Length: 238
Image (cartoon, rainbow, N blue to C red; front, side, top):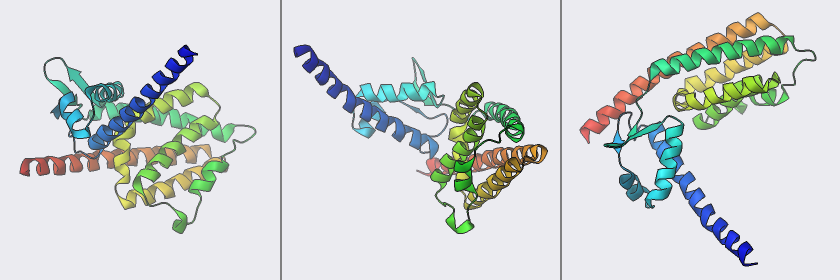
């Protein structure tokens, strides 16, 4: 009985810390995403702990998670640092993504019976007045659109690799949804891709998909550089 009580007590102690770690993780990630923490910025665990009014343990756990995801790094002498944007690495990830998704649409167009894409139709084949306008929401739906296409092939390994690439591109892809015209373009382009897959026009679907991802890649680079420049100017004036 005493053992059960101890286990429950341990669980109670771990749960709040887990929640706190998650909150701190989200807060730092948001600061990186919105350029409040700029690529190359250095900071200590103590500074973050003071800012979020928490002890260093959940701060370290949150930072370790961000390090695993490639957002920050730590060195023995100079503490933590926000990783610089490596556009070459992003380009390579986009290239792998294009290869995977071109293979995906080819397979989807050839599958017998045809894949069930009802969930995607409900989200993307809607009237303009029924579209979402909130950038972060559309960004999450955009990521799921591409993941659900890969999942619909039934190839679990392909879906796993694609999901890993999506995670690593998320920091930069979400920037594509800070502008209204890009949100509208996403709806238009997804609808066209979906219709050509449903009509089993593989070559058209591949062409549309490649153009869609290439356009996003190009816009993201342009917007990121602009946002970085603005954030750096603001930091110099403070």
